[in-house]
Image 1 (cartoon, rainbow, N blue to C red):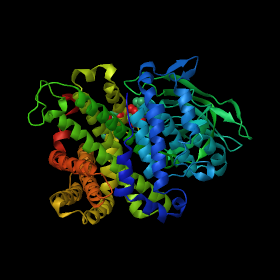
Image 2: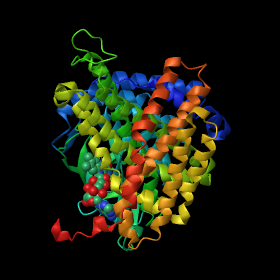
Image 3: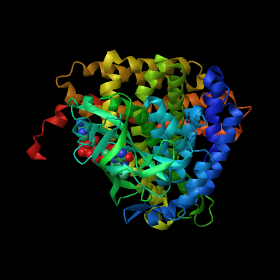
Image 4: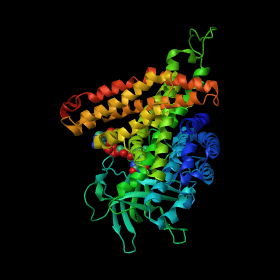
Length: 586
Ligand SMILES: Cc1cc2nc3c(=O)[nH]c(=O)nc-3n(C[C@H](O)[C@H](O)[C@H](O)COP(=O)(O)OP(=O)(O)OC[C@H]3O[C@@H](n4cnc5c(N)ncnc54)[C@H](O)[C@@H]3O)c2cc1C
């Protein structure tokens, strides 16, 4: 597999589209840490390590997969050494707290590095992603002793993190969790239970794995209010920070999966394991949500990274593979490269225009997370609330569509393992499912974020969109009007929901279409923001770069934005067309 991080695109977003250095300078916690030169240097180094160290492991890792041997999880050849180099270079702690050894870099930059990692290898990227997420949760909710003991080891990559929520009877519905935590006299807890599907639950890349486990106290109230969060190390940590005895944390088995075969997906048994409360008793889900907001964005970015990798492979193949003759752009001497054919161009343009808008949404979401962390503004809280479920589900649904389109460009060769593109299709598929299925993300977006408070969160986003689109040049006014109208209609439809008979069913049946409609509206806004920046800064950018942006924006509005109408029509359809058929007629 060949993958090259799209550095120029990334720099364009940070510098020209989002003018990130202005924000960084205005935030005291970031002003000293990062400017555009530092950010560009980090992107360059990130590209080097992902292109040269991570991407070459991807194919062999898929062939070899992980194995459970005598109770130990063995990762594929080359993983250990590569992970060590990756960790020693500080990448796991890129956005970590400087007080505990993290680099303190903004999430706006972190999302771009995440994309490089997933573009290079999904399975490899997951180990560091889960570790960074666990560290974030401990930094946000852990007691000082936990932060001092665990954060430096997680940021340095010497220890890894895992997120332990799912049980056989508790998937989307975590109220059914049975894992128990019993308080001990010394203030610790004894944790017992079985978790399934735990990514990076055990492996040989690090000397310890730190589990963040959702469990119930003996007297916990029923429902999700009864869940508490515990830090449970695989190996106990002595008072001086050295490793002690094994802690009753065992890997029962590793799953055999459709994709991400080099990522260890484990059944983890906790047998009276010693654990420490993170956050407040019975408030575990709220604490876990800190981790989940970042993990959900990160998993969304898995969709983007795969789409970009697929685009690169398909573009290169389309420039080389000769079949059929084109008219106009055809070379006229026998067969032409398939890039001359309208249908092949359509597929490539579709992947590129969705991926570039998606990358812009990742940066916007990262910017909102940074503002929420450092400014605690209500605008940022509204944007994070809306954009995280949108990014997770829309990036991954359209990421699968993009990788399938890339595979289609290869014809039959795309179905054969050698070309590598089929691995992307298999690897990206899980991202629609884990971290909360995309159906659950859509319910979160419509039911919890858009509908409450008369659509207040959506109004915050709309205000920002309308204000920013005021500066777009006259040439794009028709598209500006389309985007503004799309947002007006999203708000209007949200209003209509309140008058519907069975609100719960109506939301449940329409949420995914509502999320997709929102995705196309947001991508419309971001395409206009990108062309406006490219045209404004055209002296500084190469003419071909500006021309490409304009062409992709035109393609998006002509060929993809019309999908908005179809999704909104589905949202407006009565829920009876989904709910009326009796169960036994299915
Ligand atoms: C490879 C892999 C890695 C994973 N990694 C982790 C990990 O690190 N940590 C962890 O804790 N878990 C992990 N998971 C678990 C994952 O998050 C769950 O599988 C996922 O959240 C869905 O739960 P479930 O499989 O029980 O499906 P279910 O909850 O049974 O859902 C089945 C279907 O019903 C739908 N559905 C369920 N409830 C509703 C509802 N109320 N309204 C509408 N539709 C609904 C779902 O959208 C889905 O389509 C992983 C899973 C896999 C396969």
